[in-house]
Length: 311
Image (cartoon, rainbow, N blue to C red):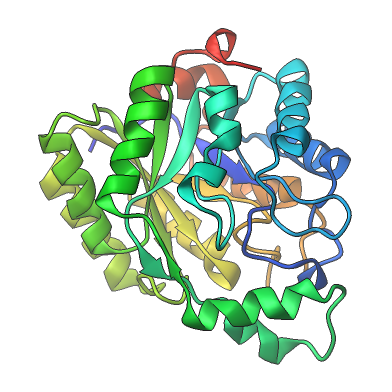
């Protein structure tokens, strides 16, 4: 594993997993998303992983009319790496998911490495009422839903974003098989090192948040990629902070943010993504680890730089 000199913190601010009812602090409007992202960058995040939401009701949207102004405002206000989702939201086609990334040609985009069941429906049992009518329908739809990321889909994204735009990727791996799929693309010469591998634990349908699985994920990635990858760890929900800590001890970079968890401790809702970043910075510093700046993250991941984007 290629080890970053310092720990790179990625912050994912809003995503397409949590619905507004789950937390009053979840950023929904462009102003809220920008403010949350800037707070996270100021707290120590080198990379900002971004989704957009409909400002009227908070549902995920690929609309570049909403998304691009967010990116433009962040570029003007921070030197953090701007990472645009290609996952979008449930039931979006690959073409819909790429509308903004292809216009923005960012330094980095996320890329899910396989199709999978993506179960959010257990959240339905935790609330008696929802803020918006779309929320329970959205959650229930995941009971009979496959998040589609076929080999053809991945090849399409690699060609049009990677090859044509010079964008590099946060390869999101929700299970061991996703690592093997990424190894296939490496063998075919369709991706190039260093691979930024984001190991994701705790999504229903993906690998469970178990310490043995964390070790197995690292061993498998070591075997497949050797020195050709940079590892990062994401624990969903209540597993966020402990999995980030364990991952960092094992040599990983980390990802936090309100996309991945709405908590900042046992039963305590996080007031912002910056709060989660701050908690992890304190933990890392107490473990005698340094935090990477955006410039250092760009160097480690060999990004093209913020002057070569389309926004």
